[in-house]
Length: 103
Image (cartoon, rainbow, N blue to C red; front, top):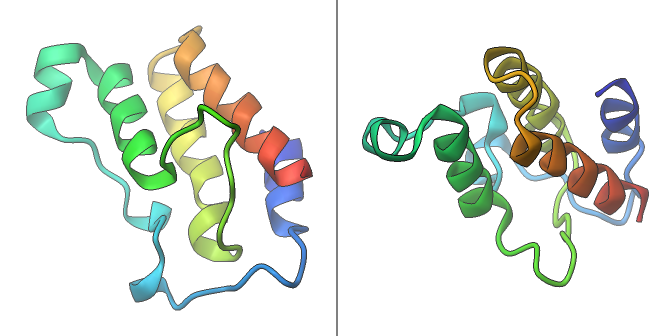
């Protein structure tokens, strides 16, 4: 997660930094849907919310903005990996976001 944070902080300058209210990601205000958490578990609900915010990962994740809102995904992942240790889906998110950030 340290490497991910550093890579997100170092994203290329040509990627825009939106105002927090206009961010597509808004990871500083992250929560899961309670119904989804009840139906598919907390880690599943986190995965779903990450999919909603990032979009499809089929052809590789594409980061469309930089700045505090995308950087806050590290805190989100840290929180949920701590709550759901060993969850391979959350670990895959770390890998995929890191790969996208490394470009």
